[in-house]
Image (cartoon, rainbow, N blue to C red; front, top):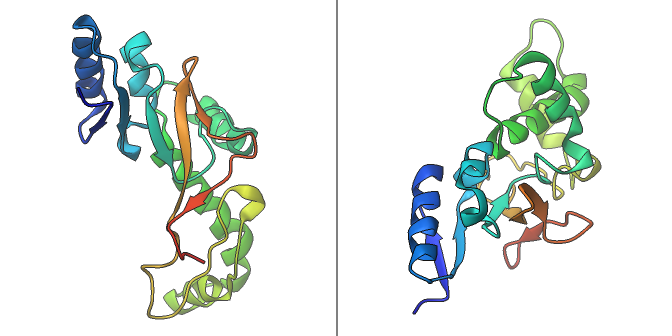
Length: 172
């Protein structure tokens, strides 16, 4: 009789769970962790429609902000799997290129990279991040935010049109 099902399994398993539940007339809200936020979940079809997840960035498959990720994948890895993890890696690459890169000279050093990271303050990278900064010696509080997403019409869609981040209480 539960109203929601939070799964901590892989994409194929959550699709099978949803399919089994629906065959029995059981229609809870299905939810899971970021590992399900990938194109492999599409194989679940209508049974995974409405799946609630989180994303560390705006949605990788529907946000105009992540078009650079989709374009690069189309060009260099057109048959590769796609998802939140890959989109997040591209965002980190953009952060390094645009914000950390100016601190790096040849030969690059760890100290230069750290200097660039510690120079960040409320960095949003054009809406790709919630506003991050790095404090020397303290890394737990760097980013405690996600964009809630829902699998809608075969795409991950943010909970609001602004693709707003939702953060842990007290996070700043």
